[in-house]
Image (cartoon, rainbow, N blue to C red; front, side, top):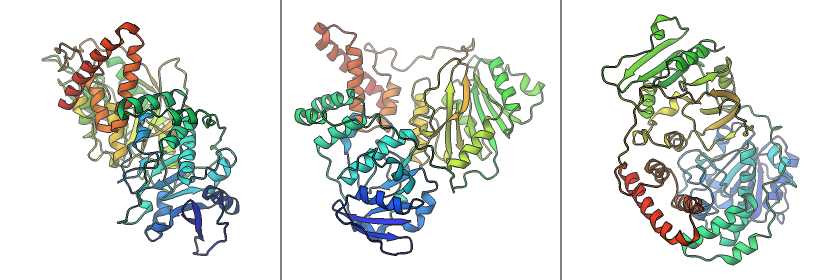
Length: 510
């Protein structure tokens, strides 16, 4: 392990793991100094730390949190990160609003303290420019490499108790526009400009114009697949899995799911089925649960209360095994799915896994293992210990966004969601059963119907920053405006705001 201390964007001291001081050129950029050390020590972890926090650096836990070589960790204890709150105007992902109390997935890196493996630095040399501003460089590296399979986190365990204050001044608007130009699609420059005009009452014409001349980094050719991954964490012990399946009116499809589970090379311990039928005096139609023999225990609950959120919560309360597979009643599974999942979970040291989830003849576009911004309630695996105080929000029953919200609950507990494209589940999207009934939403009698759906807005209010919510509102407005004539645009604006206000009212009420 090599530790680089820095001050005022220059290296001040370099120490090896044996507390041996190493020579360095104090005039080189920090980023260049890191690369030079990577050349000398290609198998090492390279740590950076602001000189003012030298006594707070938690070196003893770095090996534990940096559990494989394809990681990039950093931490800034202050509330404002390098790019500031306004980066929320250009990105709606879960990686913007960082929970500083837990290990949280984000490309927003900090010069305060961090660690990366030398192999990554050797790969990105001459491909990602070594910016003079070390914070800008770190954020650029993570933003480019995270979609390519680099695992990036804000990790509070890098520092021991810290009572001082290392405070970022919010980055200049010029730097923000530059970063957006280099790392986002072109339309986001325009949207940033519009957001700042509408919500900040600013007119940043010069920063917008100057940013046009920077070269994009979105087309950089990098291959991180050569960096081997073998986590030192032990995420599996007894290798047991329970499967939960909410079902309503899909007797045949559920039977096929159970047959697929019975053919697994690693059998589940329990299959937990919550069957719903809202019709009075109805009874279970799943006679094959007891009429046939199955190579696992079936826990069957029948309820007249319909709703996937409630059904999944009932099923989760009955989980006994080390892992739970959140399955659906119209999935088809490959015979080695459960065994392959456990292999991947052990290899990457993850406690939440989501799979490829395509319909028939649908093309798979995401083919890299990466930190996912989504969570699928019908195609994910979660370790039981990660489920404490986590559940499907009943406020979202019969609405939209319960999957995303559940994933955000996991992330805010310190459990990242990792996507594995090699794990494939076929989603049949079977027709609804015949006894499903139309659910009347609370706002259906409103004279002005809400836009967007109050459940969507509820999820955003719960999980997004103010700037992300504002950006969503502007983008939604522009999308709907395209369908209107120019002469009616002011009338449409007034109507849109009324619909938004109704949605906001019900989002706060549910």
